[in-house]
Image 1 (tube, rainbow, N blue to C red):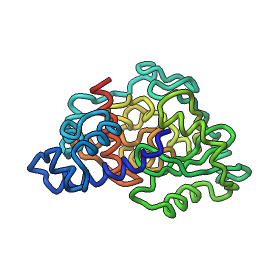
Image 2 (cartoon, helix red, strand yellow):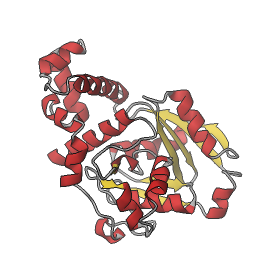
Image 3 (cartoon, helix red, strand yellow):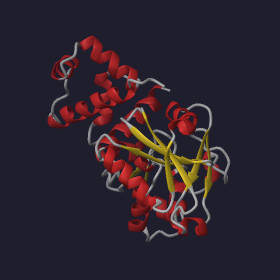
Image 4 (cartoon, one colour):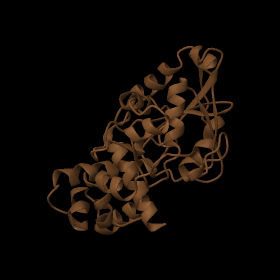
Length: 278
């Protein structure tokens, strides 16, 4: 894995802030590079390495109107899992994921009897706290907005009766495959039955595309449960792999994101850029 990824994301976060501050003006390469105290050539290379496109082109993906364009151009309905190749515990369309869910009884035990291993990893979206059992990854948190202490508190509080052991090497293969989007990554989803339905629906949304909270509610047979769906989306413990960032409001608003809206915008822009150049 490229160990400069977190640094690259830090630069992207600063770029988002600069672009927001100049919403009525497209910043040139020289302007962006200058405000970050970089040469234009270095900044161009950094951007292209991270985003897959030039800084000038990337700005269109970071604008606040990008979510509305995604709803118009890349909206995904979730009528059947077969549309995108999701079938039970089979491989998912977007990453080579295999998933196993806990039974309701296991979930009710709040992680009792589970050993959850954890470690910090570099990712395209800043430092990532990853957790997993012997069956697969059960948690990924991004700390660039929340901070490392809050990320750790948040994930460990979800399974208060589990035993937590720092052991990044036991997770490294899965985590690095996941962020590189190669090989196979196993997921161990720990949640209530309604949450699992919502998370499975999110997995049907291809990279570079989006859906809405109301569409998810309709697809799981409970169209009036939009607010409950929003809560379940926000409680997704496996950021990026269960793509809660692809859920938007029907109005085109970004909605919430548990690990910070700048991270959500960056992920959507990153995926959109790669979809366009693929």
